[in-house]
Every structure is written in structure tokens, then in C-alpha cells.
Image (cartoon, rainbow, N blue to C red; front, side, top):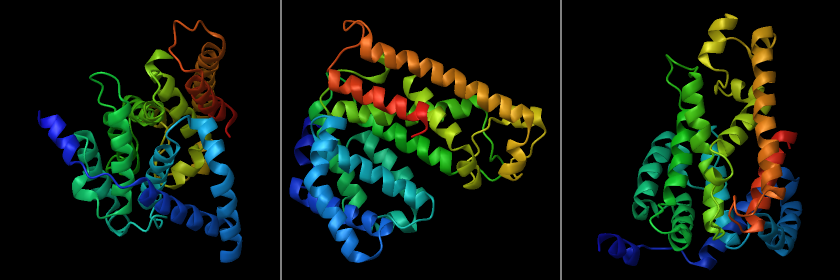
Length: 301
């Protein structure tokens, strides 16, 4: 009874309110990428015309909720990097660590009513409403979003006395970051979830992305070389990334780890595309979505 009451009382921003916010974010993003407001207006107009069809092909149904999730993710990542959120969420900008931690707690409860004053709260509430409608049986699909938030905060907010994490700690981060793929699958109304592909699908994708961007992340203070490997290579986490990547031990570790993750994902892609349908539930569009995400990581796109 408590759960149903919460659902009835849940305040969900309207389709049109989220649409206006999406347009604002798209304009600001395009303005960063173009010279002047005129170019941004033109590019945004083109996106409004063609993007829905492209996004529906990529994600499946519920396009606006998929975009709301991506916009919230992007603003959270920007704020944790010290950049201005495109949505103009001032609380997120001013207190990114605290906000992300609080958002994770509220999302896991399945309702962010207390955070609806800000754009990211509105985007998130809109996503949660979609997840509640589409989740299967006793599934708590909001947990996938909360896992992503927890892992993102753990990755960006490293203790000063422990900037490097163990292999096991990094593995947990990759595993939880992979929950984002299940958010999109749930929003699309798919029965498929990443564990049906393999226990390590999301983990391998996220680790491969991290290794492809190892240098940039290191410069941001996000060390994605396990502490054990750094110790073996006699490399300090405070060393420059160029010095780190000159280490034969670290280069060999990265090459071997990338190769192992890529091999596993190539098998997953084959099974998604050509495997027995009874082993991996549909729909086909969701299998294609996961395959594209894996191929992008493999190809470093």
C-alpha cells in the first residue's frame, strides 16, 4: 500500500516541460560547439527535426525519457569536473558531490520529490516515472540509475590519501556504471537486461572505455590503473601520466586488459547478433543497442 501511495503522490514533470528543458540543453551544447548564437540556433533546429528518429532507432521507444537520462548524466559529469551544467542547475553546480550523493539516495527510494526545484531533479523524476511503468515484476529499475550515481561519485571523489583504487574496487565501479545500459533497456520496455548477455557485459564496456581514455582520466585525478599494478611498476599515483605510461609494466597491463575485455565483448556482440534467440531475450532493437555500445567501446569511438 505504501508503494502505491508514493506512486500516486509522485510529481512528474510534463512531457512539454521536459521538452523545453531538452531544447535549452541542446541549444547550450550546440552554442559551446559552434561560433555564436546563430549557428547554435540552426544546429538545434536541425536536431529537433531529425534527432527523434535517430534516437528512436538507437534507443527504442520512450525517446524523451532516454534523452532526459542522458542529459542528467551529462550535467552530473560536467559538474563533477567543475564545469557549468547545461541545464543551469545551480545546486548541482555549487555542491556537486553532495548533490550526487543525495540524488543517489533519493533515486534508490524511487522518488526525488525533494529535488524537483532543480532541472536535474526534474529530469530524474521524469526518468523514474518511465522506469516504474516499464520495470518487470518485482524489479526495482531505479536501482540501475542509483548504481550509476554511486559509481560515478566513487570514481570522481577519491580520498586524498587513496587516489588509486584496488582492482576489486575498480571492478565494482565498472559493474555499477554498467547499470546505465539497463536504464535504457528498461525505458525501452525490453525484457532484456545485461546479465542475460553475460555477467560482465557492462563491466567490460566501462573498463574498456576507461582504458581508452586512461590519459585524460589520469589528468582529471581519476586513476584507472589498479593500485597493485602501480606498486609493481613502482609508479606513484601523483606521477605525471606520461611518466606512468612509459612504464613497461603498466603498458603491458593495459594492453592485456584491453585485449581481454575486447575479446569478451566481441563474443557478446556475436551472441547478440547471431546467437540463439531463446538464450538472450528480445527485442532485437535492444540487442542492437547493446551491440552498438560494445562495438563503440571496442573501436574507441
